[in-house]
Image (cartoon, rainbow, N blue to C red; front, side, top):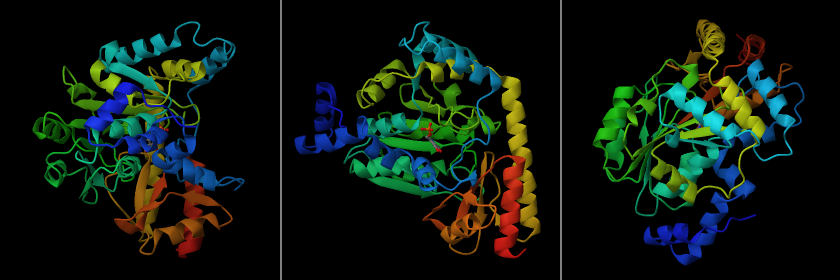
Length: 388
Ligand SMILES: Cc1ncc(COP(=O)(O)O)c(C=O)c1O
């Protein structure tokens, strides 16, 4: 199914150099065209789909959480489920926005909920990139922005990221000083490394005023980094994006957020999916879990303990792990094509599904941090495959 672009969106695209012939193709990725969207948005989803049917696999391949929403979130979903006959009887949307505004110290007008963050990510690239206005990212990073920019026939500049470090923001600006969109992922997928807030601020202050900065904070709650939401103030050239798919354990529930000036939110929506609204279960759950500061801290601590235990074990076995991850993933240099290791670990009795590799580092694969028992199974499978 393809969305019709509205008149304003069509005119905007034509002003940015697209031909009328290209409009249908662009509409296809912005609408409810599920196949097109998942091609752009969700390598994780695609990987999950590829793993379907592997009963009992240890899922540490797609950066999901090893456990579900906090109990208050599950209870909220059950409560909302009873009112599933109504669109939004008690204004759960308003409650969610109020809660997020209070936690983040942002005006309610600056908060927009979405069914996940992958959709708005595609829309943001469509809103700010074009054949003459490129995308700049680090490399490696979450590829969805690359895929969308390539689909939009926008130039893509990638600034390689040093092992163990956050994005090189000066190299990002130098890579295309006149880009339409600068994309920072912090903590970064797949390296887990954080780009310091001072560097993000530097890019914000030094990029051209008419370009947009997107800070994707999908993994923020796993780190103790300060959110770039603190940089928004009265600015209209920064978007901060969140998802409930990671620490909050709601990947299958689908909820995400963008924080930005209302005029920016409107522009994202102009290139957003057809109106469909959000599930009241997702909004009510998100509202309940957002204030669970103690449980967030405890889940982060559990992840860190599991991550560090496995990194220490790998290191002791002489297997190289990239340093610096502050999120629920780490990069292992297998010293052979990482794809081979992915297949080999899946073929063990433990059936461990690890993550993929990125072209810039073909021998390095991403491993998601799972539960203590997931990580024990991973270590046992690695011991067999590597003979260590
Ligand atoms: C950095 C980053 N951004 C966005 C997403 C999209 O996630 P979702 O659509 O579940 O919010 C992901 C998923 O893996 C991600 O890693």
